[in-house]
Amino acid sequence: MKKIMFAAALAVCGVTAWAQEPNIPMGMFGAPQTANVNFDPYVAAPEGFDKERDGIKHGTVKLIEYQSESVGTTRKANVYLPASYDGKKKFSVLYLMHGIGGDEWEWMNDGGVPNIIMDNLYADGKVADMIVVMPNGRAAKNDSRDGGYGSFAAFGEFDKDLIGSLMPYIEKNFSVYADKDHRAIAGLSMGGGQSLNIGLGNMDKFAYVGGFSSAPNTGRPQQLIPDPEKTKKENKLLWMVCGGADGLMSNSSNLKAFCDENKVPCTLINYPNEGHNFTVWKYGLYSFSQLIFK
Ligand code: FER
Image (cartoon, rainbow, N blue to C red):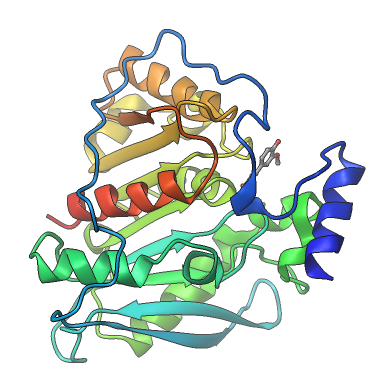
């Protein structure tokens, strides 16, 4: 039923034969625009980075509920806690956003295996201490995943909920740092756009920003970086990846071109021949998480 309603919502917008977000075929959004951009080198993730491994410690994923002041409802988020989280030592926080057809469960249930990727990285000593918060990025009274394109506006309202309610909840209830140098935001597609908008728009709160296959909700480069000197000073990492066969590439490549012109450090990796899917997003989490809080 959920799938049918989501497909119906998309059909209204002229998109048909679309079962569910993670199955979006290559080229669904038109021909990728990849011209004139200096991509950063793609280095493949090692075999098994996303496969559950025996003989290592495993973290846990907890569903939390918090009162949202801006939405006026109780909202949910999933929180990955690594095995080394003991409630005593302080950890950093990565906010990890989902896409247009997802919710707080998308990364976990639709093929993102964030807990497995993070467990493996921890076991190999490749990441700094962090917890991963997976919110519902649709800040509306009805935040169910059936909304599709109809919930576009709700994705734009999430900054208030995040900064006003979710971050304070996390910082009160978990043993985490509460300053910009210990906060990162990244996400896939609509969540990539949100991460770029919120992260670059609130550099006093987030030092690390990642966009994976960011969607057309991504602000224009001049909106995201109105003052290149300020961004250079305050942002510690602006990192993006997008599939080379993903029609949404221009959202990332326009920003990369603007950064290059204005000498703002920025990474954009073109995942070779890949479309709009969790192959790219898992790689995004694997790569981005190793670069933050260090
Ligand atoms: C669009 C194409 C894709 C769009 C949003 C998306 C709002 C989002 C896709 C996703 O989150 O997977 O034109 O416009």
